[in-house]
Image (cartoon, rainbow, N blue to C red; front, side, top):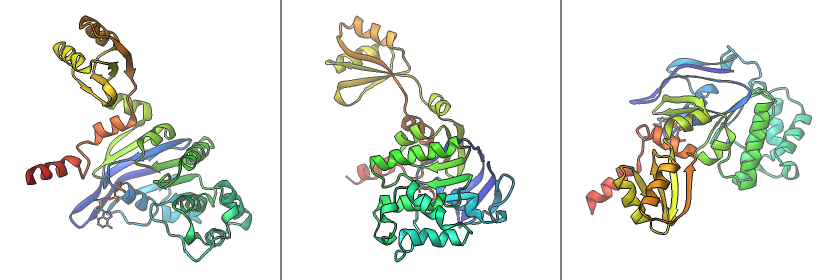
Length: 310
Ligand SMILES: Nc1ncnc2c1ncn2[C@@H]1O[C@H](COP(=O)(O)OP(=O)(O)OP(=O)(O)O)[C@@H](O)[C@H]1O
């Protein structure tokens, strides 16, 4: 179990992390989300003792990171910036890491197999593709067979097969009872990987809840309708006091209504429907709704400026 207590970090006038407290529990994958600049990487760096908090602390089963003897055996991490010595082979990179933590050669071979890099283990890591580099980073994180895994954007640059592989790997590690915290901007992937979510914005905690509750709490029910006459449908819906908008391919999305109500309104207007269904809210919808105000850089700011210029 990881406990963050009142973690605070300032960079000059920027308060990057602002009294952040949450707990990451074992046995499930916890997604760590937040808009760009929310403070995810800063938090992960402080969790790994790479950056010092101004206030607060992080505990692993009650112990600070620097109190862990042979930390690789407790906490495995993949950070966004790769620190692979380009002249070393994948094997020697891992062997060097292993030897500094009294981990045997057999485990090096084992993790190379786990991440599918066995056949390229004697190639220079510097020549690896982004995806191979990510796999090597994950091999390093797994080296000490740690009970805690912290991964910053692990699917970054991976092809679909690699993305699926990471998902299966993380879920497998969590099922073994490990504590897995993973950040990603890929909402659709996060939605099927993580069971629990911690969401931050501007360095503060916005949500710490199950995936299902997060989506349910942050999205109103919607109904999706397809018709060859979307404009007439929109008029009819507006007449009934419902908010709706047209999406691509002539699909109309109605907010806060049930299928029966929408079906009745369409029938009243004499419209033929191709589809009428409850729309399952997505993690992306819920995330955007919650973090709208907390996003540091927003598209509207740029749009507004452009409009002003022209
Ligand atoms: N070394 C630093 N010096 C000054 N400011 C920093 C430093 N590191 C981070 N920051 C600031 O702290 C805030 C949080 O940044 P951080 O990289 O942790 O966010 P993030 O959630 O990981 O973002 P992203 O999703 O873009 O990776 C930002 O405002 C950033 O500009």
